[in-house]
Length: 342
Image 1 (cartoon, rainbow, N blue to C red):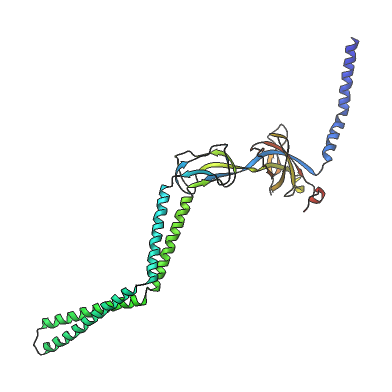
Image 2: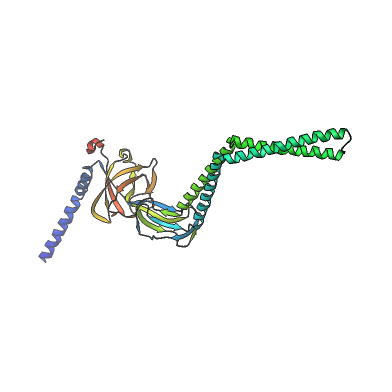
């Protein structure tokens, strides 16, 4: 009975001591925090830089060698479209370019000497025919005036003379053009046609290249939003790719501390999913305007203003995953006090 009474007295004494020491314990905790006034502790979650990849052209998916959770190196093939139509378009445009180049080559070369000589002979033959028809018409005109030939014969001779004159003038024009070579205007048109065909072929090749979707950076496939054989339009999402090499943490800074925070402030991060490891980061973004965020405590309906910040963290081992809870300590000391070179 005395032992029980003694135990009760001991318990009451212990409780009395704890109650009396309570304020001192709180004071000690406050002193530990105030010993590091330049360190700001925050909590948040790990996030990644994500890109939704899509084709720039339409078509049917002929190859889709990726799945959710797969790691892709930079430039790795994500998907392919059936490129039959795009290859045919490229072939047609290539043929059109060759034709335009051949026509321009002919225009620049001009007529061959043999062709020019043939045009000259044709002109001279028609000139001889014109001279003959002119002589015949003069003779028949004299006979007509003497009433030796009829009006009909005279008219026929005049018609033959006009035809011979027209034929000679046309042949002479052909010869002079051949002798002068291709006109500058025709050469300019030929060059413009070649340029137009070249641009069309380049565009066709670009379209053909767009039938292959590649990873713009190394990362992990978070979501696959398309299926093999599906016909997709330009811009339709195919996969969501996350960059695990460089993750970031979203956190909120109280209004009482935001004035001390600076861009590029150093940070030390601990992730709940990787206990015992520390990660280095830097403040990469500070919001210009405060947001209303849930206040600490059990009452989640209360909100308090805070500034959203972003902390970039290198993640070479890919140990930090999207959605991991994490705690961070930001060094608020000026660079000179923190021992960091400017």
